[in-house]
Amino acid sequence: MNNWNELLVPREHTLNPTELAVGFVAPVTDQGLIAFTGAESATFLHSQLTNDVEHLGRDEVRLAGYCSPKGRLLASFLMWRNEESVFLQLAREIQPALQKRLQMFVLRAKTKASDAGEGQVVLGLGGGQAEAVLQTWFDVLPAKPYSKIEHPLGTLLRVADAFGAPRYLWLATPETATTAAPVLAERLNVGGNAAWRLSEIHAGVPQIAAATQEQFVPQMINLELLGGVNFKKGCYPGQEIVARSQYLGKLKRRTALVSVAADALPGVEVFSPADPEQPCGMVVNAAPNGAGGSDALVEMKLDALESADVRLGAAGGPALQFLPMPYVLDKLDV
Image 1: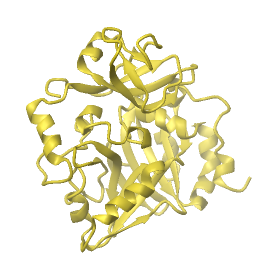
Image 2: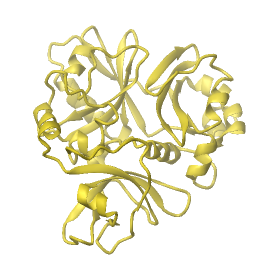
Image 3: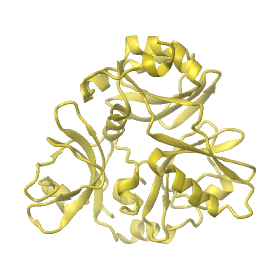
């Protein structure tokens, strides 16, 4: 065994929320990374995304969305910057098309998009033991969610907490990951992409993928509750519709955290027995929960959410069990 991929082999069984809460590490291989490099990178992205990019600090991490002119999300990003570039992390399966689309609108702006994921390992860590394990290499850790540090051993992002503990993304070289892997594997439960996605779901953080593109206005998936929408910034594609939805109460939908005793996939519709002919929502993200079913983030009408009787796939399908959200789910206006 001479590389990180051989050393960090996921457990034969699917990690469950209890194991994640204790402490876990997961090589994250299903995420892409776009770098925008050049003097006008922040200005360009500020005109395209739902969040403020021009005032993004080098120690900050933010969520952001990219909408169609109709205000529907084409992608969601985790965003940060360094001296040279602004980085957008997104679902790898939609990266090539999104990168090409954004590059089309650059025109004369002094910026260029490139694939920044090559030659880099992304490790997701979380749970009660993760902080102590990371202190093996890092004297100082990011102090709060959505902050970051740059270190000789890589970039360390702190993202939304889950299971009452911090979560981190460590972007490292393969050599650094290989050196760290034995300690990580010895002290933490080892998972893969599904484990990281399960932790994201329990943090209440959605991600747009191929199956859900152009399905949701940002508020439908709670993006503004997570700080991913800035309503004071200037125009961007779909901005008028997003703003109207916020201030005129045009939407009556939110995203909830659920568990279901079945396999769930993004894009699958959910139904209320009270109105069995029409779907009342859609699965945004889902991951195996280690108990033979799935935990998921599901967007749905508020009346269905309040009734707490929602089924997967059909009105007679498996029932969704609603779980507590990790943040206040404001339902007043959208």
